[in-house]
Length: 137
Image (cartoon, rainbow, N blue to C red; front, side, top):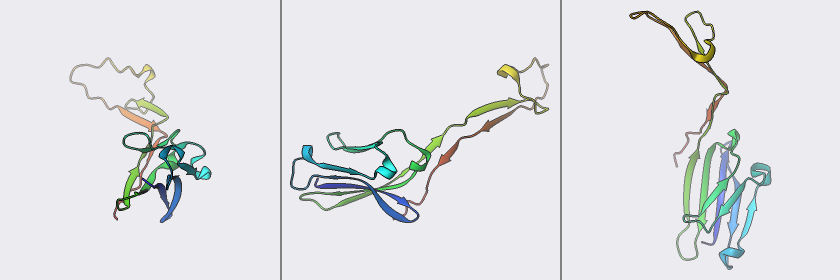
C-alpha cells in the first residue's frame, strides 16, 4: 500500500480524520497524520496487523456514523470501503415498578397466590444508540 486515508461523513461532507502515507518509503517509516480536533490522540493506524486497521480508543457517542477508507496501492487500483459505526450507550439506571407504579425494593416480587395476575414494569433511564443508516453509494 502507498497511502491509506480514513474519512468520516458529517453534514453530508467527507472530512479526512486519519492518513498513513508510505509512498516511496518502507512501511515502518510511513507518516501518520490524525485530525486531533476529532480524534484527540485516540486513533492509530496499525499497518502491521493482518488485516491492517484503524484503532479508536475511548469511543464516544459522537464517533458514531459513516466512515470511508481509501487505500492507494503501488500496482493495484485504488480501493474504497464504507462502514457504519454504531455506538450503544447503556442505560444509566433500571427500575422495576409494581402495579401501583412503586419501585420494588431489592427486585423481589411476591408472594402471589397461584392464578393471580400481576403487572410489572421495567423502566430504564439514560442510554441511547447512535447510528447512521445512509449506506447507499
